[in-house]
Amino acid sequence: MREHLRLVRRGWWILLLAAVGGAAGGLLVTGHMPVRYAAAVSLIVDQKGSADPLSQQRVKSYARLVTSRRVLQEVAAAELVDPATLDVRSEVVPGTVLLRAIVTDGDPLRAARVANRIGGELSGLIHTLEKRSVIGVTVVDRATPPLRPVSPRPPLNVAAGILLALVFAYGFLMLRSRLDTTIADSDDLAAVTGAPTLGVIGRGRPLIATGHRAEAYRALRTNLQFVGVDGRPRSLLVTSCGTGEGKSTLAVNLALAAAQTGWRVALVDADLRRPSLARYLDLTAPMGLADVLAGSARLPEALRRWRDVDVLTSGRVPTDPGGLAGSPAMRRVVADLTADHDLVIVDAPPILPVTDAVALATACDGVLLAGRAGRTRRESLAQAVGQLTRVRARVVGGVLTFARVRPRSPYPENRMTFQ
Image (cartoon, rainbow, N blue to C red):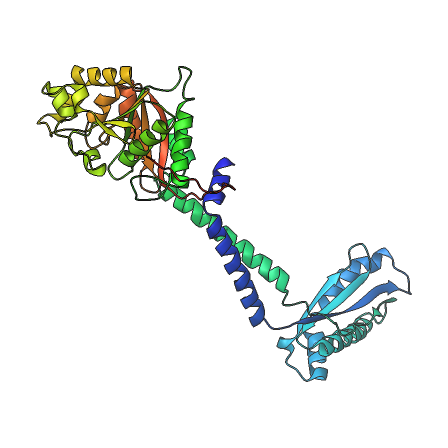
């Protein structure tokens, strides 16, 4: 049931368009359908004017005579029409000796006239066939010209069009859901990671978030305080399955949101293969993490202050970044930063292309896994989680990035500002 509700929630606009299209299709079909009227004549099969079991047995046989060739030819000759064009049917009223002859025609007057002729012809035919019997057929209710057509029925056609369109639209949503293996929403992310989705970040390219996107990072910061029974992690590794999933933007904005509360925050660029924070933040850093790990610089000398955040850039690119990521020196750097800060955020490389992030995860208290809506595949995310699980890293939660979100707060939008 939950899966069906999720499909409806995701594809509501497709269902809405399908309903509108189905209604339009129903109206179009209605406009091309000929107008038809139905008139009915009622007859009673009796024996000297009183119904008996014998009459009830014969009424079904007489009902078949309504559409017999003999009756229709006589009526068609009187009306000067082709017998094949007559639309006639009969029905027996259950539990009675009454039968009705129903004629459908485009002209209401002709429909009533043909129905009454059929009643007269049937009475005469039965009288001829039952010369020696006391059973007869008598017209008890003559047909009158109908005031309203029986076809087309606009409400019924529109309802059928909407229903048919919704069925096809929902089938399309089901097929798309089966074929599309990317994560679509926070429920997908939580289901694959096995951890709560701590934040949903809307689309946007600017590095520094403003407006409702900044509020999303503040909500993420708040959610981190209530992760696990042991409290929030002091050192947090931010990574993703692959490139282009917004992990670096996530790390920078989370650091800024945490610093707003007065926390002492350190931001570390641990991507020693393709470093980006120094370029993103426009920092001039002659030394960085690689220099500290190599022993050519001390940690306090390598830190740079940027908007209330202590930033440790990557430094010069080493020859063996994978080895440095899992080295005891890296653990000491994270431990030293954790001792002097309330929160240490480590921006790591993606998990699947290289093994650096998995090695770095063992040095941090928790891992925050970013997944891009509509791009990150479930199988890739599951593979990344599996690698982290094998080294007993703690995945504290996931963050859905590049999601389609709309600000719903009734209050004016507050923008994140810095001195």
